[in-house]
Length: 310
Image (spheres, rainbow, N blue to C red):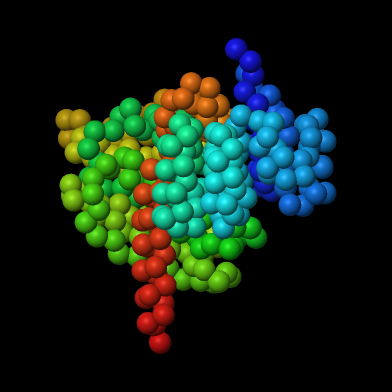
């Protein structure tokens, strides 16, 4: 079987990492890349011994699949171009600017029988995979995602930038219709909110409390899940986890075994395998569009509350 020819559109902070991994994946030929900043494109291309193309269309003409790692506002346009040319696509999150745009990409990919995967990377974190093996019925979920001010992705608020990761994970773990959402947030250094909290109640009784900030002095990415027989805690950064149980009136703690690996490498390996086989991706357009819909509900709720504040 011949190598899958891949490319990257957009080689900023995240796109460069995609380029690095594609250049190392077995069964993959990293053909080249495109970026609006020609100087940046040339430097990254030279690093990997590939070509910097003059346009996304020119790149698409010589590849089978591509990552789109450009600003969210461009995802629909570039995604439509690549899918329209018959190329499998992995789009960094959030999938698009709106649920309607997401639906259009989903429908286009479906009509052409192409893979549309979205970069919700925590679904490929070995720590989450280990937690899922111990999961029964979540009753309460607490998620914290804190980071220092990034200086990038500030065209969108922290909900669409960071919280959307935890929203998608929670939706995946609970798998129940949403009953209500209560959220708060505020802008500090950006035009959009920089810190936010959302409390999501599900029809099956589960409650998820998600807190996200991009103005913290520390980096934290943790999730805790409480279920009938245990309390599970995991750290996405350390790829570590613990499970607490009550046995004979005593609380016991057990390490959750995690096979550590680089989540982005696992994500791209899964994408390229789906592109070869036609299998459905772990996080396809549908899951990503639902996460986007909920993230936008939270963003709009925060905006309404802040507009009403004196």
